[in-house]
Amino acid sequence: MEKFIGFFRNVTIALFTGALIWSYAFLASQVNYRFDPAGDALGTASKDTYFFGAIVIFLIINVVCFWFVKTLKKISTTDDGTGIKNRSLKQDIINWVKGFAGVLNLFLSLVLVFLGLMNMSADYNIKTMGFYVYLGPVLILVWFFYLAAILGKRRN
Image 1 (spheres, rainbow, N blue to C red):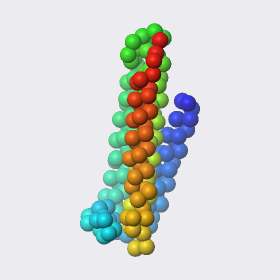
Image 2: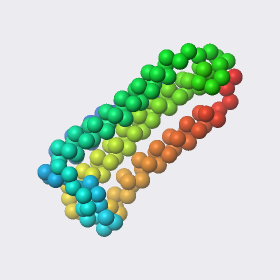
Image 3: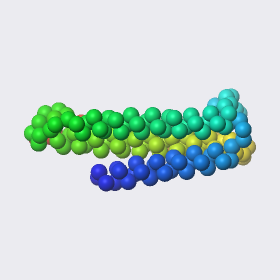
Image 4: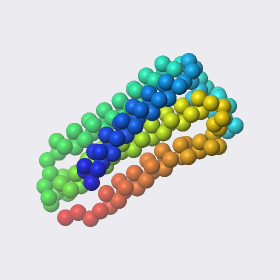
C-alpha cells in the first residue's frame, strides 16, 4: 500500500503540473474564476495571478504534508505502544497523509481543468461540468472516511 500511495502522489504531482501548463496555455489574459449558476463570469483575475496562485497553493499543501510526515517519522514507536506510539498506527497515518497530499493534488488538478475548460470556450457550461465540481470534494470525503477506518482499527 505504501508504494501505491507514493506512486499515486507522484502521478498527481505530474497531473497537476500538466493541468496547470495546459490550462495556462489556453487562457486569455483575464481568467474567470467565479461563475453564477448560468455559467456567467462573476470574478476575474490576471493570467499570471492564476498561474502563480496555483503554484503557491500547491506548494503550501505539499510542504505542510511533507513536514507532517517528517515530524511523524521522528516519533519513536514500539509494536505494543498505545496511540501514536504504536508502530502500525504511525505507519498507517504516515501513509494516509501521503495519500491525502495526492488527493489534494488531484483535487487541485480537477479545479485547474474545470477553470481551463470554462475559460476556453463558451460551449461549456457549469451544468455539464458538474462532474469536476463534485469529484474533488467527494474524494476528500472518502479519504477522511479512510482515516476514520484507520483510527478505528484494533491494534495490539
